Amino acid sequence: MFSGFDLGKPAQITFTLDYHELLTGDLKANVNCHISYDPLRIVPRDGSYVHGDPNQPIFVHVQFQKNGPTESKQLYSPNGIISAPHIDVTGQGSMLFQEVLIPNNAEELIIWFSYLNPNTNETLYERNSDRPLFYFFRWPYHDAWVRKVDIIDSSTSSISSFELEVGTIPSITEVSVNWRVINAEESLKQVTSLTDTKQTDRDNNKIWTLQKSVPKGAVVRFKLNYEVNGRKYKNDNASQYFLAPEPQRPNVPPPPKPSTYQYFRQN
Image 1 (cartoon, rainbow, N blue to C red):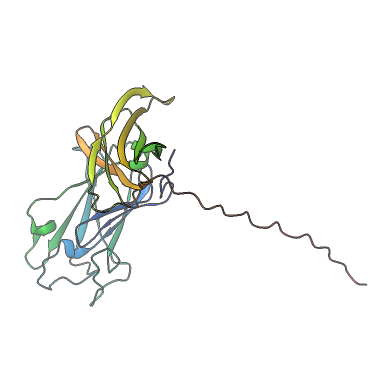
Image 2 (image 1 turned 180 degrees about the vertical axis):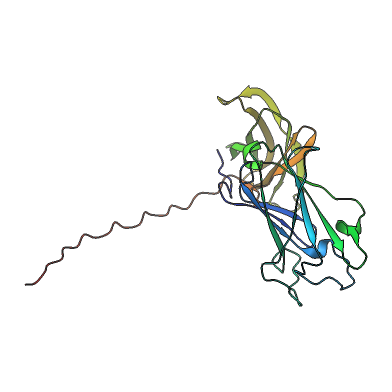
């Protein structure tokens, strides 16, 4: 089975100024999720917002089930008020932070943000909307994972086969792969549905397969899309995507064994 890039690492979701939501780490129930948020996504662009000012509060709101209870926390600046914040659309600039504990019974993570404008006493949402914009996350490494992947070359043809096998939890009803050959000119992204084999592994997880023709020697970059309870999610390997054929792990030699020294005491 393909080992996820961030499997077992702390979960973090970064909300960038260019309106991307980047999930890294191992998001799942019973862990803390670190929220990193660019306040310029939500505050008025009139220059009245001061980064990190607690009197200009931005809140993160979360739910763990559809129509479940809501938890709200104020985002904070670890460096306090910053009069000249560093602006970076990729999330590497001055950000606000908070942590959310995902309970054991969580079915998903639903997130939205609000800003209380102290000048007007008006609650604003992202993109100057009067309604919340909701973001939905699940547990990608534990919902849908790569069991096998390879590029199979033919000895008699210039065409190879991109072959993928995916495992999922039983409740997933649809799986597709968003993929592209990255070492061929003018190769466009494709989205292809996987076939439910109607087979399961020993843990009763579903098995899905795909076989597509690609140029000989192709390298395919891909991510998984899947559907649970009518909602779509993705596993993009912590924004790193997956590769076929799988990259070879470096053969790093083990560290040398420590030498045994004998110490002699002179009398």
